[in-house]
Length: 365
Image 1: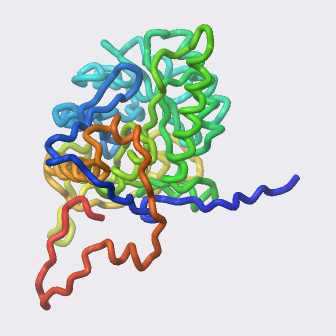
Image 2: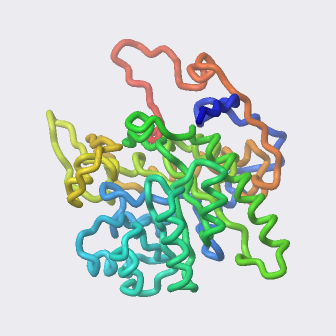
């Protein structure tokens, strides 16, 4: 019995800034954002819309594909054949989000042209997830397996040992997630990414030295949750993520599921965590909620949001003297820990005339 208190501080995006480097990048147009999603599947933009029922169904998945990213349709569509039909209609890489029940596994053969599965559980470092990874690999050896969520090196290592090709990292950082409040469990997101990336690299270094490696390409890491702007994305990529998964920024757009709600002359759309009371009631669960539901201001099309994020990421890489994510990950990038005062300094703080409205980017939250 006893408690092990970790002396090192856990850090998240607002706790650090990236130290700029001397750059030979003349224009951000020179920067390529191509990345590996998993295995040999690539994206031209390292952004994935979250598999949440108020973020991604077919419309969002199609839009994300057109913009170079990926949309993963949520797994809580009641009818299995309708879920499979929707995923089958998705352009580009078809990734099926599943849980750990046998009924989830039964959906896999129903999807046409399936590239891989995303085993999506709040606490991915669990025996049931490990068993599900092994089952999918045994029954469907041609599919890529993404699994999560984890937030520790041990969790990352165990999922890779079980057969996962990619990891989803993040326990509790999401905008409508209350896991850390309800359970007291979690790891600050930036620290989680850094530590899981180190574990992933160590695992692959050991694996590729074997006479018969179980995997021919390095595993990849998807940072899931806590992203509020393009700067957070750049920090996640610097920390070791190959791509990021985003929910809140894309909720409230035309492409997100749900009707526009008008209250007091303002337009909104619903956004909720998949462990919120509303989402659980939809699937007949009575577990203690670990998420909330809220109204997000209606934003119009997702396209300008994505374009704004893309431009910010390109600029961020240029500050790091990187023309690609491969360049970025091969460099040593310095992060400086900051104070609350420096974070206040980082945000727009110009005085405005009474009644004047200072412009802020739409993705600055």
